[in-house]
Image (cartoon, rainbow, N blue to C red; front, side, top):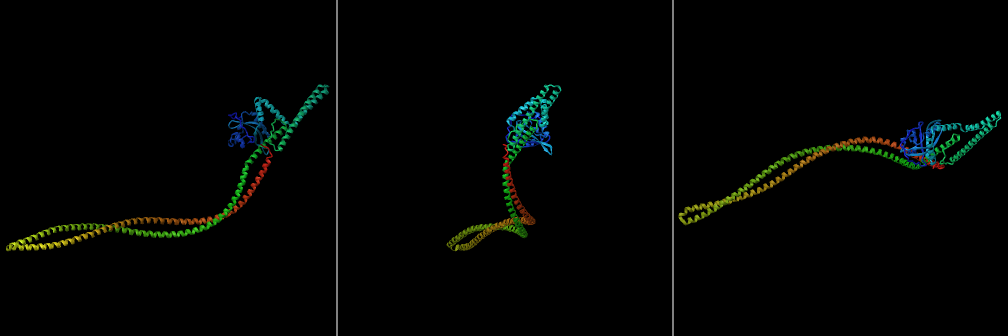
Length: 565
């Protein structure tokens, strides 16, 4: 026998309304467990499915109990008893178990066990029984089982026959002996044995009447819907005990079924309400959806028209882009020509700038030469000043010579002539010096005026050089800008080509989309019709749900008649 260890001394209390149901195949492998059973045992449903049912066997339960159970259910009869089970944690719990064979076309296909909370009195009597079984020899237990099986097979009619034989056989035997031997002892003994047999028969009949009255009382409780009644387990071998045992199994099984039905109904109450609300919302949404689908169908028609306009616009845009592309090509050619002109301008300005630089240098040299002439004129003026001073002194000497020659008289006539000539020469020198001074003054003025003009020309040449430099720089910048603009125009032209190609692609796609839009429009029309049908069907579903809720409420009112808690 399988021993499940370890075990503890901790008892698990089972709620009064818990229904522990399990189902096994012919070999005792678990095929179904209720949620209450999984919760109390501590095993998950996955852990128990496919495992042998002795997974929960407690080592305190004698093996004779399970042997009796298997012999009973394998014969096709229900079995009930108080069992101590082991939880996964090692704790224990007591159950009032009822095991019945599951019949399929008259053949046993498995076994179902329904368990509920055992009472304190049931647990106490079970503990006494377990103790007795452990302390009783196996032979006596087998003898007891054999007698029970024999009486069970005899039934009520067999027992009456046995008791009748106990009455009449001794009497008949006594009468034969009395006639033959004329003795009175044996008849008296036969009468005594017959009386004892009659007493056994009367006792059996009275016990049967008592059991029948209890069974009738149980049936009345069942008819009144009381499935909370306690049917004490009794061991016996007659049909009456079999009927009682069957009623006990029936009550426990129906109790478990009713408890689960009630719990499921109470759990499903919210689901029913949610289903009713959902069906109502579904009906509303399907109606809205039908309206939306109609709007969508209308929108799909508008989309088809819009796609036609888009295709036309794309064709116009493609034509415009082609014209823009051609214009960009012409602008690009113009930019190339302007760029070449700017190259020529840059070259010419560079040449002019170079010549202007040369002119600037020439003007600077001329100004230097003018300044030298001016300095030379100043030097001549200095020399003329010296000559003028000499001329004045010569004139003074000539005057003195004339005075002295006058004093000398005739002796000084020759010297007087010389003095007169010197005086004339001095006068001529003065006149010549005046002319030279005037000439030098005019030359200096002309040189100064020329120097000023050259300076002005030099300034103009410098300004012209700067302007030519600016023009050259501007030409360089303009040329670079033209190159950049030409590149940008190239990119624009490339982009317009791509846009044009993209427009053609979009035009083709728009054509496909228009075809798809027409198909969508047709599909949306079909969907609209289907949505209307769904809306009508959802209304019918809501009516069915409401009707189901009403029927469920009536069923629950009927279930209230049965007392399960």
